[in-house]
Structures are given as C-alpha cells and as structure tokens.
Amino acid sequence: MIQIFKAIIKNILRPFIRPFFARLRRIIREEMEMAFRQEIKNLYSLLSPIEEEHQNHYHKINENSYNISKINSRRMISNKMNNVLFIGDNTDVLNFGCRATSAALAEILGHSVAIIDRIYRKEITHLFINTPLCDDWYLYLKTVKEYDIECYEYLLSRIKKNNAVILNGEGSFIFQSPPRLDLHNYLVILHACIETGTPFYILNAMFSAFADEPINEDLINQAMPILEQAEIFAARDIHSQQIISQYNDKVNVTFIPDALFSWYSLYNENRNILNDMLHNSRLVLPFIDHDPFQHNMDFSHPYALFSGNSFAAKHPDQARNSFTKLVLALKNQAEKLGISLYLIETCSGDAVIRQVALEIKIPIIPVNTNIYFAGKILGNALCYVSGRYHPSILASMGGTPCVFMGSNSHKTLSIQTVLGIPPEEQELFPAIPDEDLVPHIVSSFEKKILNQNREQVRNICKTNASIVQDKISMLFKTNFLANFF
Image 1 (cartoon, rainbow, N blue to C red):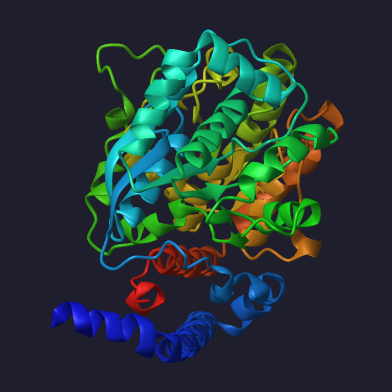
Image 2: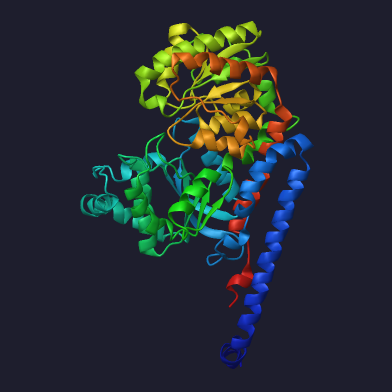
C-alpha cells in the first residue's frame, strides 16, 4: 500500500503539487525579506536623529544588499547543516584581527552549522610547500597536482568527509602583482570543492586591489569561474561588493558586515570582568618576568593608542623613520591634553612598532596579549591612530574614535563607510606619511579626543552586530519547503 501511495503521489499528484509549493516558497521568501527589511528599519529607528543622518548614506548604498532573494536556497537543509569544514581559521596567527574575527565567525556559525573539521592558516601555508608561487594560477594549480599530489589528494579526502565548506575570506582576496600565496591556495581549495561536488560558502571576505596599484585583472579572470560556483560570496564591505559586481554579475555576492561586530555585547555589558582588568596593566604581559618596554601603563586613566599597518610592515625602514617622527608628535600633543600615549602591536608584522617603542622609550602593548583584553584596551582609548582594519572595529565597538591611515588595500577606507561616516567626513592619511603630513594627523588626533561621540559610534556598531548575526543565520536558516519536493 505504501508503494502504491508513493507511486500515486509521484505520477499523479506531484505535477499539481510542485507548482503550488514553488509559489508557496516564493511567498515565504518574500515575507522573510520584508520582515528582515523591517527589522533593519527598526534597528535604525533606535538611533538618534543625528545618528540617522549619519546612517542615511550608509543605508542608501546598502538597501539592495539586504535582498534575501539573492541568497541561494539550493543547499538549504532542515536543522543544522552537519559536517562542515571551516577553512581559513586564523586563530593560530599572531594578529589581533585574524584571531578575533575568525573566533567571532566560528561562534556565529555554531548556531546554524556543525563545524567538525578546521584547516588553520598555518596548515594552508604548509599544505603546498613544494609548489613555487607563479603569476599564472592555472599553472600553479597544474604544478600542485604534479609536485604536491599527495597533499592535494589529502585535501580532497578532507573535503569529501563534509557536506559543505565554509571559507573565511578575510583579507586574502587582494588581487595584486605578483599574486598572494594565500589567494592562490584558497583558489586551489575551492577548485577541489568543485571537483568533489561539495558546496562552498565564502564569508567575511573582501575583494580589492593592492594599495594604490592597478588590480590584477588576469588573476580576476582566472578566479571568476570558481567564484561563480560559490553558494554565496559575503563581502564584508560595500567597496568589495561593487568591485565583484563590476567584473562579474554571475557571482552571488551580498554585503554582510564583518563578523567581528558580533562581539559588540562582549564589550558593552554593564558588569564585565574586562572592566576590572583595566586597572592592572601588567595583565598585557604574556611573560611577566620579561618586560623590556617598562610597562608603566594605566588603562584606568585617559590614554590614546597608535599602531602600524600592513603596508608599513612591508617597508620597515621607511616606516620606522616616519613613525618615529609621528609618534613623537602625537606623544607631545597627548601630554598637552593631559593623557598618555601607548603603542599597540596588533600584528607580528608590526616589528617596526617595537623598534619605535624602544627608540623613544614609550610603553607598548604586545601582540600576544589576550585578544579579549586587547579589544577592551582599544575600546577604552580616547583615540586610536592606525591603518589596521579589525583593531579599528574593536576600538569602535567601545566608542573609540579613529584616525585612519592607509593599508595594503581599500579596507581602512571602506570600514569608514561601514561605520556610517559620511563621505565628506571621511579622511585617510598615507600608510607611511611624509613629515609635512604629521601636523595634519596630529590635528585630527586632537579633534577626535576633544569631540568624543562614543555613544553614536557604539550604536552604529550595535546595528552592524545585529545585521551580521541575522544575515549569516539567514544563509543557513531552515527552509524545509525548499527541498520538500
């Protein structure tokens, strides 16, 4: 009887039922989209009129980004998506941003998917260690399959054990000449996903040229056939979304703020142990018996912070001379205002910051500081001068105003849009500023300190936190009707 009933449904009723459920699925999707748009409006309505004015430009640009109908539902399954491989977990890297945003993204995903396997950044670096980097990605792929075939087959086996792959893109999709090794390796991994028929999602990613150089269009043309196969490419900023759409409208790209914004509540609870930690500056020391920088810091009294950027890390000699002059000028201005200036080493590549600290004898917060405490230090400062992307988000979540410097991509310009700063108020100083720009940076530094607007900055970060949590959850939200027939 059961077989007869199944046959009747399949051969007689199914042709009539399928259109009904297809229409019902469209209605549900439209209702979900309307509900989500209304939620965004409700979030913005909580902001003050001044904040709404700051958000108008931001919201106007992003209105089309919150289009849930763009999200591919082909792979949606009920309950949690089981057996997910998380690639690009950068918590093993001495970098504030890598550690923080990787952890934040994994935490958000944990509500919707079951991550049972991870490939960390250092493992990716050593995965194809025998393959020399070359400009042509197709040649690089061919070389991997010839000289690192065992590693490639090992990668295939890891992917086959999972139902889906989620790639934490972060700052790897920078199309520069010569190309980045991590981008080449990620494209190889995504190619392996296609080869095994495993669906993959690219989240928390940017898409950019390198600094002020022309974008590597040859590499973009090689990457696009792979990116077209992604279930979703979640760009963490509007600039990245626009560049992808400019080169290929077949990529399923949407804008979702950086996952790190989801840590907003961590730094804004009324009773927070991190607040008490600010009274003991020696907690930043990973090795209490080794303190070459004389950590006479007091985070319970007013202070400002300075750190480097990814571009300066590649030009240490030039950066050291520039930063020494800049830090001395900032230090003098801070003393006039009655506050302290500390350096903060947000990445192992900021060795130049350590050199500056030793040369002018200024306290420095080391890169291996506990990342939660480091975020609290950044968010408690009166001002943060930097070209670092994620540390600027950590600072902003606490309400700290930032003076932005350049970096290895458009990220410190694009983050200003995500933070709701109108175009006419955005400023970006060179990654390695000339001496004649020092007074302008100091002037901006002083204005930020004297004109604090911390609640507005925090509210914008709170809005972004809600958006990123809701949108990533929506990507994997249960929609059993989509796969019922």
